Length: 128
Image 1 (cartoon, rainbow, N blue to C red):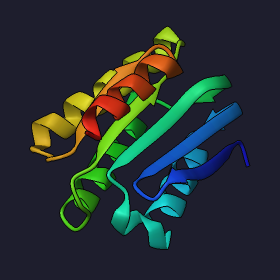
Image 2 (cartoon, one colour):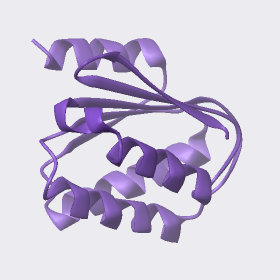
Image 3 (cartoon, rainbow, N blue to C red):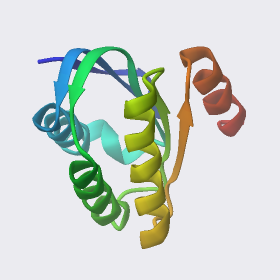
Image 4 (cartoon, one colour):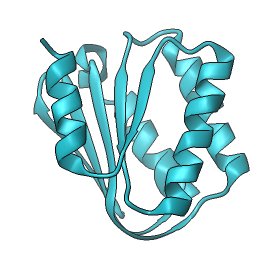
């Protein structure tokens, strides 16, 4: 399992990805998040791909994730998600995911960051 979900606070979930990450891994991590009892209190999600070695995810799969998350946004509280990656190709997939979510009218805020510190500053500024 190339990911680990951690709740450092009652309202913040961090998902750390390591090594080779495929679409199935993203789906499992998302399912674990949505099925966790703490999801109802979660306001911030940090999806950290900074330690990912390689990925096997395509644009179509990013669109599929956006559709899944859009459906979830109908029954979960508003969520602010930070996506962290320094991989240019993966960053492009995250931008595609964010544009798909925006086009569907999702009420969740999604933002891409190149480093963890910047993402954590955004989360801290949003949680005040």
